Length: 133
Image 1 (cartoon, rainbow, N blue to C red):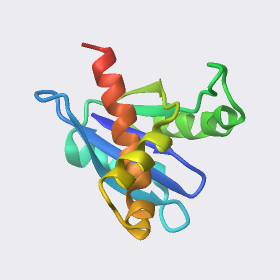
Image 2: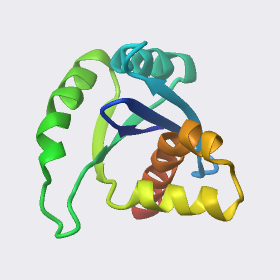
Image 3: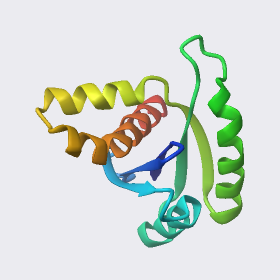
């Protein structure tokens, strides 16, 4: 299963297998140099993913924020590009949690920038997996 954290400049990708049900960061896609939907479709095929979970940008109030509309087109394109189910799951505060996790681990700022979105995707995917147990 793949977890996707969609951003305007970068898309974080995490992966989890059906056996362990533990998510781990996989990669960050720079949208200025690569089509994220095409890359995710290739990962689905290469990793034999059975589903994709896309983080839904819900506001702290629980209502859809302005980023939800921007993401709707991405999710539609992704659903057309892959043959597996695409789910959406609340990604509220995942970037904040990713920043805290990296800071607590003593990571340098440059390394944090490189991994932030993949770790946010990991946190979101793990939340999804935990909610389905």
